[in-house]
Image 1: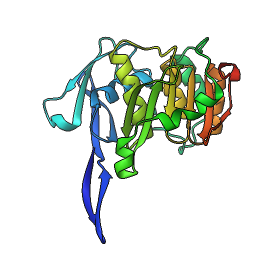
Image 2: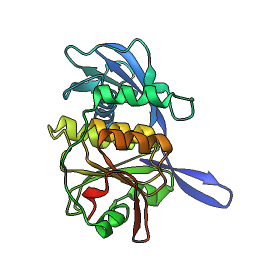
Image 3: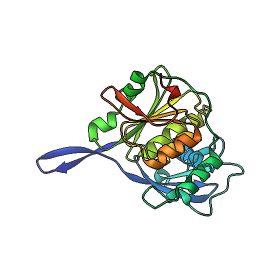
Length: 245
């Protein structure tokens, strides 16, 4: 979603950014700044990625402020007392503690597809990003199969939101874990993206940008193939390279 704004000498299309409140069984859990669209997927993917829900929840609009509040119902799920998901890579998070938290919610990944290196390197070029083409301000996540076919793509101002939307779409469709899937992101590879991919059971995560040190540690620990700098026909594989032919 984009809107036209005036600038000196003309008009630009800019990405829309609005808050979304996610409620779980009536209790507020999080507020995220997102690009409107696919909000139910975003809420489901977020809660699943954080280990708050284990299966596809029921998702709908809240009665008040319906456009910016999503209500999630999940039997047995409890609203977290401590909002650990507000901690990001800029907050000095303890690496060991972070790895232990993800280990508790994401089983180690075994098996998965093998993909040719040239094909892996080309996946970012296969992402369809009409919102980015218009605005230059949106991140994208795509889910591919081992043949390089794009199955799902979502865009958002937040890279984490784009990943949550893709995982949420699969979760609500009954297709998680993503045991045969390859996730591709349009930017750098931070710890949180590896966490979400591992939680979803995706064996391969590739990005245009660089990985962080903790992202590499987590991918190695959870059995996920992590690849970065996928551009110009080249790609660097940092962990579990046996899935890359």
